[in-house]
Image 1 (tube, rainbow, N blue to C red):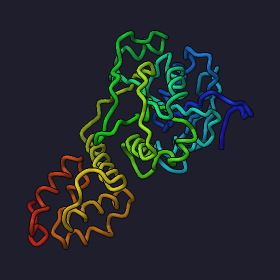
Image 2 (image 1 turned 135 degrees about the horizontal axis):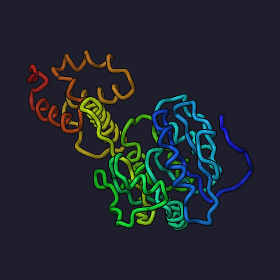
Image 3 (image 1 turned 45 degrees about the vertical axis):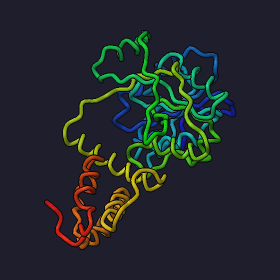
Length: 307
């Protein structure tokens, strides 16, 4: 289901924003930033609504905005993919609901996409209480230089989901964002694109202020768990990193994949018989490696591991 004016128009670009119910209150700020773009380009905004209750009346008017129902599966990847399916522009630009794009963001990405199929902008992290966010909403963009160095993962340049441009045909060719990942979806997409011989082109003028939140210990623990699982999934899917060594290590990796798909019980018994401690695998990447170093040694599966 898509809400908003339906026309056969063609656009120079389609901006995709995934939104959960918790983001409804801050989405307005991002829409205002998109309204203030300094460009003659004709672009649309597609909002993948993962919360299921967003209405156009809640948003500022003035841009071609469509809300795409995307609550069938939880997660930003599904919402982005559903919205991108409706895109009329040949250039897809991705940003986050709670961030703020700079005034030349659309122009800079689209200009770069004319010669390169995959782009990554420059992002500056700010606290949610930073007054630069309020000034940006009022129309005053910071003059400071934004970091232009691309994020790297295992030696591969990554285009972040909050500041990414990609040609529509390339996005569809790689299957969009994988819903297997709760974290690091941008890394998975960048690695999939790299398999086609494409790396992201840096676009320094495509600036974004992304919001950094102060999270409690429980939330941080959950994030580390999701990142740990994502790292194992990435290693298994794209074949980088240390090779699995020994039966116990392979069981750990299989368990992480199983946890990511909600089927943990089936393998816990097998891992226990091998003498492994399954709790460590669901921590962050550091925890994962400590468990591996401690247990994957000659004969480790023949003895009870440390507690």
